[in-house]
Picture 1 (cartoon, rainbow, N blue to C red):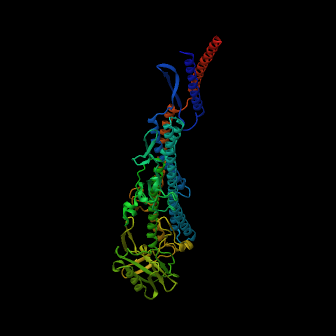
Picture 2: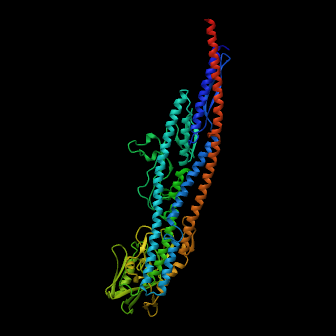
Picture 3: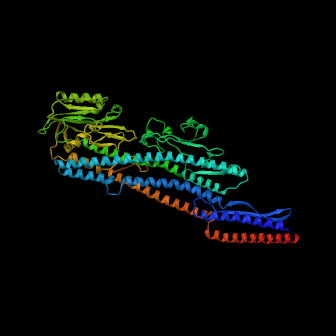
Length: 628
């Protein structure tokens, strides 16, 4: 080998050692950098004219395991979903509160039961009547507040869906930009593994948000698809479009989530030019599992039901929370509220305060189903002297004899004669008013029955007064069953609670209202709470006959169980994700001991090459001296 060749070989060794030293130093510096993979310098002998001419660097390669990388991304999607489910379940538990505090529905129903029982023991005591009114009001506010909190959480999840969609779009744009730069450098014969690390970090971030699959497109580009094969990125990135709802309520209709090409998006607004042109991932609708009311309404079920092709990632967890978990809980709360109002109002309408009121105003404003309902039996209306409790008049209403609500009005007017009148009010409700305010109206439901199926498909039987809401205890102050409160005049004057009952003798017809010591009206309220009531299947709770306090306990227990299951699932999923990352780190992570040992080897190699350069230089010097 000539001295020139020897010098060239030594210099090539110095260059390779220097490059390897730089890479090793970079490994050490990034030992704790998230997403960084260890780099190694691959080298090979340099051959010129079939003779060794030193060494050259072939590539700076990353140490990665493609299988583990794919598994980490898959598990990241699973963990992203379970983490969201756990977080919202924890928020629900915060809304329910700890057992025994003011948000404990079962306890509040128990408090109402205790207050009613106390009033039954002394129905003439005004302080005990006030406690009943306060307990009923507290229950209504707590139940309504929980139902409102469910919708607030749905709104929060919907806004989070919008933010997650924006983050997905940003990740796709970032991956596309890196694809372009990696391809450019690859075409120029340059190698920059740091860009590959940055791209992998973005892909991993994307996998946490939505379940994806990746594939090598061509050259060094990476293509990304949804789990069921829809393209998110090929030569150009796609754009996911979603507009969160401005306000979320029980019947809010959410928009679709769809994939669009960049040229299908209006650059000025960021909205799709033609919303129907996108590839739908999540359909528009009200919720994912329709409840009985939605199944029974006149709107096509397919247009109300939300269907999703997204099964993993934070986005899937948010959709599941917004469209299935929270609506299911709301259904249970509405069922509890509806059952409370129905049972307590049925009992309260079959009783009367002492003294009775001189006017009755019905709370039902839509009487359209009266004519088509199954109607039978009679109810008794009595006119009572408010001062001494004597009966001035008693007559019966025959439900089967009335063709519609106007027939009921006619029967009441005929029965009252000059003592009073009835009419359908401006709001569509039944109103009965006595001419003399010294007299009052008391009603006994008797065997009167008005039967029809409600919006949820329940076949319910109402008495005459209960159907028209002439003496309701609880009235709705909103559009949902959970929006209820104690009737305003009872709140103002608790003595308007129905504590007594009207005794009716059929032949000859006579009626007597129990006096101040009559507790049968209050006892009926107590029985309504302690007697099993039928409930329909709601949100995973089966149809059955159960007391309302027990049903409230079932709602709380199921929610707590779901929260515990979500916590355990999130813990398992995260443990598996951490295990996969640990195994990947064993392959691609930086081991400082190994890197330091490698530095020693490189130092020795560099020193050996430098020694050869020195020796060669000395030999060149001797040759020059000989020539001189």
